[in-house]
Image (cartoon, rainbow, N blue to C red; front, side, top):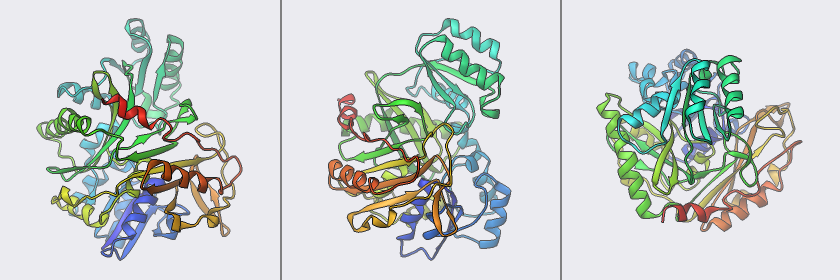
Length: 429
């Protein structure tokens, strides 16, 4: 098999790393890739969101399978374009990707199909109407920009001033671009968050191991939201009874709802959950693997990913083929100083060669590039230090021992990933 992976972050490096292990795989390209991916696959300088350029690339290299990492090419219709040409691809069509591309579409879908979610106060496309609606809501309030905003489109507002500032920046100052022209107001849910991701061929589906992301930039869940500062997975993260509830009240009704709406869904579907005292409720959908959840998930895979994804693209997924390593996995993100705000790039990364891979630690690169023979930072999230082990404690120790050996100017990472692991289990009791 020859495989094209679309994307250039830590998620895509993890996918490339796992796909490369398959005896079936002869060649992997990655567009655009990064400094670390270039060591495991041939990086091609094509923007992941440019569907036309990706079509031209695929015509040239003729991959047997294409795997889409990020959301932008899916929202832009990459799967539709490939399907029209009978090219095998893993990822939902444009109309299905609206579950992530439009928060308002997603909320209306959930309400229409009676899938548990936060109460919706309203959706607005004019700032005066949105300001007026603030007088009739309960606080704290969640405000979501409708479109894709690179992780900056959601705010938890404790009072009217914060809400008004967000509405002004999104709807009047255009700071979020076209994604912020419409907004959604909804109630705040309380509980523990959980990432529940499935893989489906349109008919059959297989759950991934459950994961928990850490969005806030600082320890103790303080500071602004990020794309994700770390994630973990463990055997006891999701009690069996709660898992069955998620499947019966959320996953299967979602798939039935999509089918009844005439929206076939194929690929990864990320269900962001809040485990409330009233049961699990949907916070959001993503139309792809999460990042850094993907790194923690891939580390626990005990199956041939290339074979499974080939089956998904062909509509013949066999869920029983997905087997998982027992124990736990952890991914800790090493970020640039200042992230998720302004940060500098071009910082030389040192210490990677001192990490013994025989310990089971993998370094998935995200914001990196090669510059005159040296690896330097090129983004906010730079590296994802990842390990799987028999226990969560062992995986954490491996990851943090490795992270301590890595250095670049301004390096920052959370020291408390998975520190509250027991609380998720308690929320489901």
